Structures are given as structure tokens and as C-alpha cells.
Length: 253
Image 1 (cartoon, rainbow, N blue to C red):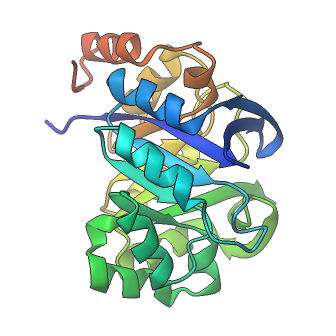
Image 2 (cartoon, rainbow, N blue to C red):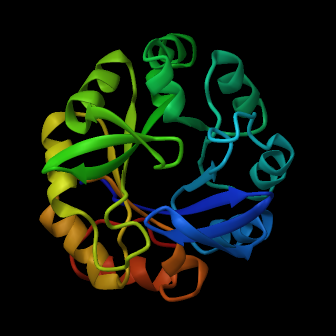
């Protein structure tokens, strides 16, 4: 049986971890280096690091902070934000990332995923999709959830996986930071459409939300969350022990 993963997410702005609701109203949380080490030591399966304003500000990702985070953790690290070229992939990987997450860069240049998968392998290329319901349709948003692309999300994800994305992070803007549960309907639709690992992001508010996620969407590979971990509302070791006791396969330390 495949082990399910629990993944904390560090949304970084100005060198600090921040968190908002529905991609807006962000507030300061902590140092990414300190928080990354804490999660690595707490039994998190992986860590995601997003430079959340790199794309909208049109700049490269903060590599100095990234390098420091990578040097202090002992779990796989996925990094995203401002990834627009193969040079960006190269720079981030050389800083210690294991996987590179691409979002707005792939929207601007859909061939980027194919080129990166050819050079680095599809296991290294993660599609991060920010999705929101618009007039009853799952729509792809760009620039940190600020810009409606007009593209239907499921078809976009299928296209990117066909181009070589080896993993998909589904960020539900509708449920982000609301803490009322993951977007089960959206996640089922994505899992039914692709045959690569899918990570659920947006909506975790309590341990039961993770239980519901893995039970109701059995094909989901991982649950990603931020504020419930950052503010101590859920302790990762306790969460994983509870999930294991519910029959959900977990890596325990």
C-alpha cells in the first residue's frame, strides 16, 4: 500500500513565512529557516516553499533563503515562485530543491514543462494549479490567484501532465485558509483525469479534514496545509498517528 504524505507549505514574502485567506489578507508567521527545520524534525514527509510574490513582482525567487532552508532540512523540498525558464529550474535545483513547482511560468510558456521534464526528468517537475470556481466551471488563475486565465482547469492539468509534469498540486482558492475542509469535488475531478500523484491544498482546519480527504478521495497522494501547522492547531506527529489509527498508511517516526 502506498504511504500517504503530509506536507507543510511555507508561503514566503519578503523573506518571511506569511499566511492569508482565499489568497488575500496575508499576515506574518515566522522565519522560513526555523519553521522548515521544525517541520523536518516533526516528521513531515516533504516541505513546499513558495515565493508567493515573485511572479506578480516579475522577479527571480529568493535563492539565499532557499539555500539556507535546504541546508537545514532532511526531507524532500519542492520550490516554486517566479519559475519561468530552464535557467530558473537550474538555479533552484542547485540551491538544494528536489522538485520544482511551476505555475504562472507554464501558463505563459506551456512548452516549459516539456523542456524541463526532458532535461531533469518528470519526477522533478511539479505543476501547481491555482483553481477557483467561475460560473460553475473550474478555472485556472495566475499570478498568485490574482488573474483569471479563462482556461478550464481539468483540461489544463491534463495537458501539463501530458507534457511531462510528474506531480500536481491542486490549490483550491475557494477553500484556501477557510479551514472548512479540502475541496473534495475538485480533487476527485483532478484524480479522475490524470495518473500522476496529486496533492491536495487549501481548506484543512482540523484532523478530521485529513481523514475525510484520504477516505473520500482514495487516489489522492498527499495533504498539504499551512496555517493549521504554523499556528500549532494541528501537530504533525499527532495527525499522522491518528491517520494511521484510522487505517490510512503513514510514515511514522
